[in-house]
Structure formats: C-alpha cells, structure tokens
Image (cartoon, rainbow, N blue to C red; front, top):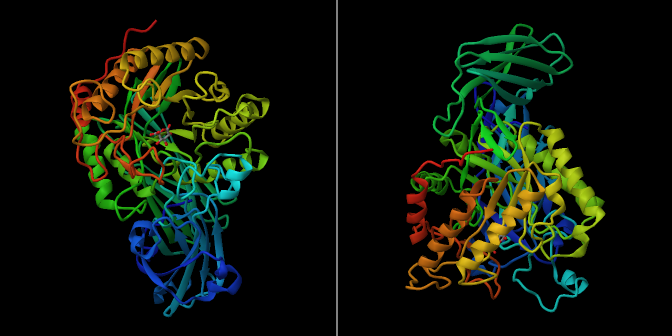
Amino acid sequence: MLFPKSNAHRDIVDCSGVWDFRPDPEGLGLKDGWGDGFESTHECAVPGSWNEQLQEFDLMNYVGGAWYQREVHIPHHFDGKQVFLRVGSADFESKLWVNGQLIAENDLLCLPYDGALDGYITPGEKARIVIWVNNEQRYQSITPGVAIDDYIREQRIRDEQFPATRPDFFPYGGIQRPVLLCAIPRVHIADVTLDTHIDGSIGLLTVRAQVNAPDGGQLKVAVSDGQVETLPIVEGNAVAQFRIEDCRFWSLRDPYLYDVSLELEVDGTTVDSYALHAGVREITVRGRRLYLNGEKVFLRGFGKHEDFPVHGRGLNLPLMVKDFGLMHWIGANSFRTSHYPYAEEILDYADRKGVLVISELASVNLDFRIADEETLRNHRRTLERQIARDKNHPSVIMWSVANEPGYLGEEEYQGEASHHYWKNLCDYTRELDASRPVTVANVGRISTNDPSFHYVDIVSINRYYGWYDMPGQLDRAAVRLQKELDDIAAEHDKPILVLEFGADTIAGAHSTTDQLFTEEYQARFLETYCDVIENHPNAIGTHVWNFADFRTAQNHRRVILNLKGVFTRTREPKLAAFRLKERWSVPFVFGSEA
Ligand code: GCB
C-alpha cells in the first residue's frame, strides 16, 4: 500500500476543504440512495472531526451516520491513467460513492481505504464524491462498541459515558485525514517493502517491489549512496539487494534517510516511478534489553492522542510540528500511537526527526466475555492493513497489538480462549513482520497474571498506583510498583516497558503536601515512578500518560478533559514538564548487567 505521491508519472488532487454535510440519525440515506447526492443541512471542514466544528448545531455528542459531499474537477491529464480516490481515515465505518456508484467501504478505525474510479468519471469534467461515515462502535470490533442495548445486555447499573463509548477518549466522528484523488499509470509499481539489517559498518537494504507489469519489463532501483540495480520482473515481482559500505545508520542521534528511487521500464520506456526513504536500522530484543543498531536503548516518552480543540482528531500539521518540537524540548525519544494508528504524515515526520514510535492497533479494552473468532478475524485484518501501511517507517520500532484487554477483570480473560487469542495474534504479527517486536499494554486490574505476557516479545504495563489506588500515597505506590516489576521479571525473562503512569493535574493548582490534581503531585508522581522503573534490571522504558490533556466522553471522573497531560490541551507546560526535561537531559545509564 503505497502512500500517494506526485511525480513525473503520478498526480494528486487534494480534496481537503469545506464539504456539504448532513447528519442522518434515522439512517435514511442508505435506504434512500443519498450516495447519488443529497440535500445538505450543514458544512464541515475536511480533514477534521465534526464534533467541535458543529457544536453549535447540536452535533458535539452526535453518534451515528453522517454524509459528506463535494464536487471535484477531474483534470484532463488524468485521461488514460488509473484513477482512484483514497480516504486517509473516516471513522469508524465508511462508504464511498463517486457519481452515484458505490466504490469502496471500510470498517477499520483510523486506517486508509481507496477505490478505483475506472468507468465512473470523465477527465475534464466534474465528479461528485459522497462519503457516508458512521462513528458508532460495533460490539464485535476490536475496540468493542457500547450502545444502550449493550449496557442492558451487560447488566450495568447505569450508562457511564456520554456519548456512549468504552475507551477514555472522545469518540470523534468524521473524515479526519485528507481525501486524495490520485492518478497513476495503468502499468505501475503497486507496492514496495523495505527491509534493513546491519553487519558491522555495512548496511543491508532489500527492496522488494510488486508491479503489475508483464514479464519482460524491468525495474531500476537507485539508492542515494550511488548504487543502481536493474532487475527483471518475474511474475510481478522484483527484488534488489544493496550492501551499503560505511553506512550511515538511522539512529536517534542521526536519523539519516537514504533515498530509494524506483523506475519501471517497459519496452525501453519509463512508465512509472516512485521514491521513498529508507532508514537503515535494526531493532532487536535480546534477553531483557531492546537494541537499536546493536546499542541498548531506553525509551523515554509518552502515550499521546490525536486531539486538539476544534479539529478534534483531524490531521493538524502545525500541531504535529509543535508536538515534535515539544518532544525535542523535553528530551523524549519516543511515543506510542495510543490508542489507534496515527496519520501517516506523523510517522513520516518521526522518520525525519529520529523519534521512535510504538505503533498501536485500534484495540482498546477488548472484553473477553464477547471476544470470539470473529473478533480475532477483525484483529488480524487490522494488523494486516496497519503493517501494510506502516512497514517502511524506520521510526516504527514495535507493534502494540492491544491496549488493556480484559479491562473489566472478567474471568474469561484468564481462560484457554484468551491464551489461544494472544498466541494466534502475536504469532501472526511476527509472520507478517519478523523485524519488529510485539507487545500488549496490560491493565493494572489484571496485574501480573496476564496470558498475553507468554506470547509477546516485550511485556508492557500501564499502572496508576498513587492515583486510582492508594491516592496521595506515593511511598506505598512505589513499593507496589517495584513488587509488580519483580514478580513479572521472576516469571518472564523479557524486557518490561511501562507504557502508562500519570496523574490528572489542573494547571495552576498547587500544594505544599501531596495532594491529587496539583502540579507538584504530578511532578512527584512521575519522578517516583521513573526512579523505580529506571533502576529495574528488566525495564526498557518509561512512557508517561499523557503528553497533553485530551477530551473524553462525559463522565463523573473527568472534568471535560483527561488532565494527565504534562502539557495542557493547548500545549502549555505544567511543572512536571520542566522536571522531566531536567531528568531527560541526562543520558540514560544502564546498570551493570549479569
Ligand atoms: C488507561 C488507559 C487510558 C486512560 C488512562 C487514564 O489505563 O489505557 O486510555 O486514559 O488509563 O487516564 O485512566
């Protein structure tokens, strides 16, 4: 799955802008053929979530179907090309029509989808694009949905969140990443997979291309160190292997990217080209440590969210640049795409800035009373699509295949079915991508007896002692945390990553003694955790929850936002940000190892 690019053979029309919009709470549109076009009632900017944009039209908390529509000119020079439309993400579920023709559908959260327009458009004329988006989560999806019926089925005493949702982040709806109209040659490069290894000072780069050209064609692959290979195409495939002497490896200090350019030649004519970057690097897990290019690495960073006033989860490039600037300022070297795949633009930027990314699947609070073979199939489908999308980013160093499964402490989580689930999923991840470790973020309620620990490469835990339990008592929290790390290490000879720990903090609240919600308490909380974790022989990282305050659904535990950010939602630093900056300005020193 190649990210769309413009070059001598390929072109893109970005359909971002203000689109016609209409909410459809009664679900009329799918029955009444709104895919052919509909009468709009509102306007909504793309990319962006509809919620805060249309708050004044009573759509802040809207959960259901909504319709988007706009016209776009198909350029004359698209004639003879393969034209398709790519939707970066339209969450949670979406269908796409062009000139009244259903072109494509998607039900995978925060992942792109596309559809071919052959036969449905005329170059030189306008085309009508209609997109239906529905932000209702489904019961069987890998972040299980929750609707009023589910509360009844689950015999819960009350609706806990409005809008109804399980996770602790706002269920934004809308077209949240760009919609791109793309034209590529009919005979083209369809996919490229990069694989890198290191051998001393030599970089080994394998470029595997899939093309839809007939045998007889050839592919020229050039690397910016000066090497060029010309390969025959055999059954739609070509593989080039390069040895880069004195290679500049992609690293935190020097995120060097080689240019890899591919040219497809048929009958002596170049018919297509595509260029991408390769960061030559190797990620390995050995014993209790994580290595980048053979050097131990300790992760310092955050769980984040795609969240900002007005845009909601919509791609926001100035915010992206600002966030990377703040991560650089504070000395973070990594973040997790909690709790869903982030925009590809963000991963590209991480490649360029030398920031390590744990790419997380959109699986939150998997409930093992309802998870079944269909859920597992959905999980595997998500994994396939996410790895296909993100595989070439050197910044992506790990797959987190789920966050806090078994969240309710349901007894089914400890059963055979759960073991089968995690073994199957972790094995499948390694089958699809043997070059990166796999993890699952474990929830405190399951504690150290988590079936997934047996199948992951890295054990990850999220902990809140001193906050949800033992509030205001950091000494007790530290003892408990230490014991859990020791217990896990005693049973699993694997690295341990603490992927969440944090305290809600109201910027401006202060106290001379340990008091929840104050800036001093957050700072001390994070420092206490870092002290314990950094000194543990199995620990390979501290990811603070969260980088910035973010919006949640309405519930009595949150004052509009989850306030665990070390930056506010609009990115002002709290006291803890300065403390972390001080701590993270000193390089991490690993203890002497047995
Ligand atoms: C968690 C979840 C995260 C929440 C966080 C919290 O364990 O993974 O989504 O936002 O706790 O603040 O409670």
